[in-house]
Image 1 (cartoon, rainbow, N blue to C red):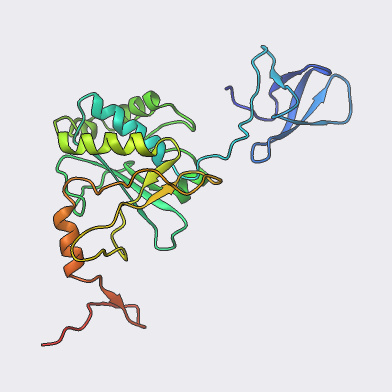
Image 2 (cartoon, helix red, strand yellow):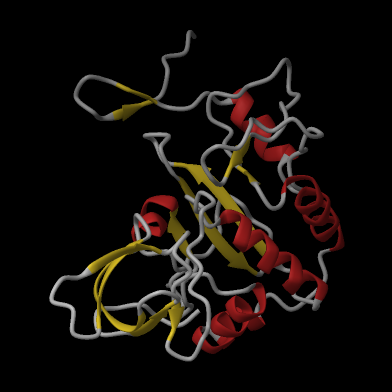
Length: 254
């Protein structure tokens, strides 16, 4: 859809041609002036059948928007896996506040804890709510193919490092996408989720938009390469924080 802004010429079925004077895309309302009328007319983009001057319909999305980009990223990663870029991994985990989930794409070695950081390859739902782009020159609402081409233009050297085979992870990721998309994403959060013995509980699943029912599909297992990490996380408790804010490990008896 073409951009909407003050000054855009529109067509209304009853008023004819007019010019937008104010746009509020949070609510879907615009103000427009038609012909020689002195007053502006308030129109709703969802119900008033407003069109661009060339006849293209202006459709305002009524469904709740995505509050985090993880589902779009999962679709992109799956497409790249199918194209031979199997050494591409998507890590996601919650912020300490629990309000938003971070995401991080990385390539090369499958090392979840020591993953390399590249500019534009990470972000969070908090940033996405205010500016719904990934950060590598993509546009809001870009399709999967558009995201891939934008990433290839932004960092071709980084994407080239994803070329290669990782069949175990690719199979795991495809099963996760089949189970979760388009409404849910996974969160690789180990802290506070210790299971019985050394057995890990299922991967947490979170909805990517408001209004969706809690996930009730098949349990999601942890990705390949997490077994040893989980054992170490279970044996070594997470550091605690004292009142001074300085991290310290739990005391152990001799």
